[in-house]
Length: 132
Image (cartoon, rainbow, N blue to C red; front, side, top):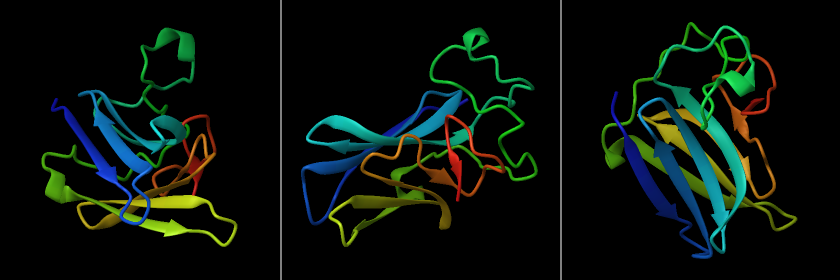
């Protein structure tokens, strides 16, 4: 299992950044504002998805259980920063949004206050990601 970490600064407001972290088990994205986490979303599991959502039986960061994800879709772990793209936007009410693309495929989106954000890889809203 490979590990990966990357921080991408917002191109129009350097107080915001996106941190992608893969610890070799599971990958998450964190939206940071002034250094504080203001949004997060599960990206993918490297390990097999647990068959139940008994969070107390898992180590943090949590793997997303099979009941929440589209198990037919396989996402390979990020190997290089060139495989990650972030598109930044600002909503009409001033919220910063980050759309996350992995290997040229849209995967997830977050905005300030989204805990969790939205993912195209989930089939049911859960504590780690909402259905996009």
